[in-house]
Amino acid sequence: MAFDSEVSSWASVPLNRRCQVVAAAAGKLAEATDELTLLCQSDQRTDPVETITAELLPLCSALRWLGRRGPRVLATRQLGPMGRPAWLWGVRSAVHRDPFGMVLILGAWNYPLLLPGVQAAQALAAGNRVLIKPAPGCESATARMVQAFHDAGIPPTALMQLDSSSDSAIAAINAGVDLIVLTGAATTGRNVLAQAARSLTPTIMELSGCDATILLPGADVQLAADAITFGLKFNGGATCIAPRRLIGQNEICDQVRTALVERLGSADPLVVHPSAREAAADLIERSLAAGCVDVTGRFHAQTLRDSGQMAPTVLDQVCADHPIASADVFAPVTSIVRVADTEESIQQVNQCPYRLSASVFGPPKQAEAVAQRLSVGNVCINDILVPTADPRLPFGGRGQSGFGVTRGAEGLLSMTVPKSISHRRGRFMPHLRPRADSDENRLSAAVILLHGATWSQRWQALRRMGR
Ligand SMILES: NC(=O)c1ccc[n+]([C@@H]2O[C@H](COP(=O)([O-])OP(=O)(O)OC[C@H]3O[C@@H](n4cnc5c(N)ncnc54)[C@H](O)[C@@H]3O)[C@@H](O)[C@H]2O)c1
Ligand SMILES: C[N+](C)(C)CC=O
Image 1 (tube, rainbow, N blue to C red):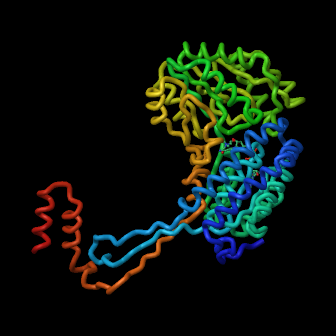
Image 2: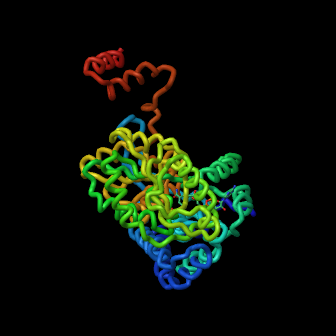
Image 3: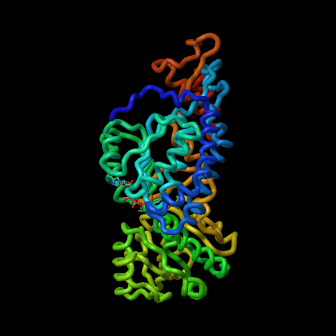
């Protein structure tokens, strides 16, 4: 495999047209809803409705958003002449957004359509070609999605699917892809980064999470419990920004715990993905052995190991330094971590190695003040999982949750490299250009004159210039 570095014919399609074609894929995906639902079910998902609510609806709305907003976000930025320094008079510049070239997208199993679908659409709108490597088990649903993009008018040479083995990803990296977008575990991030380092290939890393929900005194208990229940069960408990830790002081934790038991006490068990079963069973078993309490009382490690079935589980008395309090676990489990005050809640979030997203439940003003201090990629106030549905929001984590963003205007721009082109109109003005040897003193005086902090500094500078 080798990729030519020539501008592809897809990149030479006008920007507006590229965005229109990408948006048209929404219609083709909608037509394929029944097929995609069935394929996701045979690939990995147990609840067919999840394919529609968790994947197709947000994917289609992201594609339509790209059709509307993409041309403006990616438009060339024209810059008028700079007044200073004087030798730039007559020069006009423009900042273009070039595509990287060939973008490799490595997908995770939990959202086989939404994540690679939005990433591919953004890369294509920006004029890149795309290789999608699906996670093992997600081949057929991915192939049907790719078909929908082709049916919408994306050339087959601009969007291709690799087989699902890691070897095919490594071969593509070695063949010289120009950007790698990985969604996966932090350990996979390290391995892929090591590969990318050899060729200094840029990467966007969407990695592990262990999202916190901060419960402030005065929070609406029923609202918080409804949102946590929804987030815990969404997509079979396998969402990177699901509420994994509920952090708050005793009183609010007790109230939310009672409300969660009411909602989850008789909830249907969910099927945990085979790749997550052992890790989840082991972590929860160790937590219980260390003194944590299963407040819903329905966790059975052996059932999880044997059949993959697991009732939504809430653990209480989880210490901040316990492994489950900072674990990337893809099963319907959440931990209550009790703290002395709001300061400690903020510390718990900012000290966790995984800092993808967070939620804060409480009076809006206080919650906003807390949100401003959290070192995470997204914060929802009195809500949860908003970034899964709103295509305008950039999405990305901090710390070991990765770096770079996908989605939103910022994600779209991150599929491009900026390039400036400057035009001189009129005479070249060598007499205005600084000559480093003799003009050094005048130049430093000019800097102080233009940007100096005080009038007296500026006056001194003027005198130096006049010397
Ligand atoms: N941050 C996010 O947006 C986000 C979203 C969804 C899932 N995730 C994370 O993804 C994980 C679950 O998905 P998964 O089990 O599919 O993840 P994974 O890390 O096992 O695999 C992710 C992708 O990388 C590929 N891969 C693995 N090792 C590789 C290597 N050495 N070289 C090249 N490719 C390699 C896999 O085949 C797969 O396509 C969880 O850790 C979850 O937190 C993160
Ligand atoms: C990025 N998101 C939130 C849609 C899926 C995470 O697993």
